[in-house]
Image (cartoon, rainbow, N blue to C red; front, side):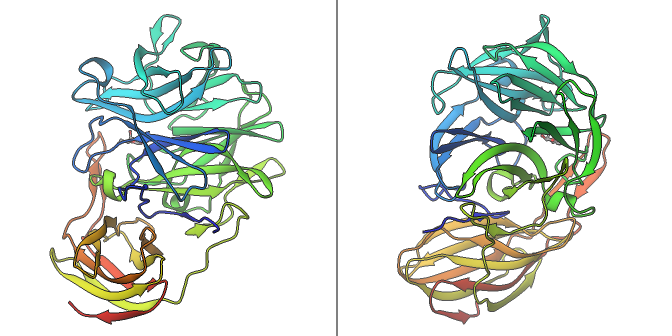
Length: 428
Ligand code: GAL
């Protein structure tokens, strides 16, 4: 069966748990892709470990376990931040090296940290701060890039690029400095001999129009190229996190990986977005948003026939249900996200009334977005009930200067659903 990447909806692993990996990276090893990300909580921002999942197709996710858990003390101890985990493989030692942003809860003690493991999906050992000329690298948002010759680089906010040593455990040379003042969450790739680096702007968990620069040499000069998504789309409502090579039937493509944050319910409701990057004449872009698509051939998933299911509420506990049958397939929920959106709980109950899947869905988006809000895992043939309940809550967060971001309301706005076979709509 042709596998689909479901953008902006929770993904579930083989155990039915939501894939909890944010500010992530994807590293390929043979036919397997490993996703490493922040293992978020639903109520606060502290470091809660870095997770590892594996997949061959971006739809079937296996939880490999925690790649790095909370430390008893130190840079990743209690009351610390751990973000933007990235993994590179040292070409000389063959070991896997994990780099991450460590900090205190006020983001006033940034420091890049290092952890090492002999196997990609093993348990990493925290080694301490990454040093450059014997000093800590006091940067927060960071990324990594591995060049075609195997040399690995650390990328930081504001646009510093450090070449790592051959073991990837130290920064050896500052090859470019301050190329993107105000830039965060750097991600980089090389295409057709040119280097491309992208950044977000600084709006905390809120999305903004991300931009990119190019250079013929990694040391620069770096040329500002502007946006790679349509202006005002807020990078299709994502923040860039990583670029990786993805094998498709037509060869290797550069894949964009971005975050659609959902503070405070990041563990349940923050989602990932993957879209192919297109290159032409030294420019890079994501030409269009696809809510779901097949990486095998790049084709967009076509929405099935949608059955009306109207529900709009901001009142905690209000809900709507629909009964449906599937013959071994999924159920899809469609709705409208806006700057007044809030959270709802979705539950799929089997004919005995037992919940076989549940999720928390965020209807907040600074730019309005209609479409898929929930996709169930594949369900065994049978009769089910889809239950949607408004939580009467929404996401909000504050920047260091006190600026408030997030929703103006708590609205859940659903317009339809679709199941693989037959379905009967029913009121609560
Ligand atoms: C973002 C950054 C995230 C996280 C967040 C905290 O700008 O990219 O990684 O640090 O701020 O507000």
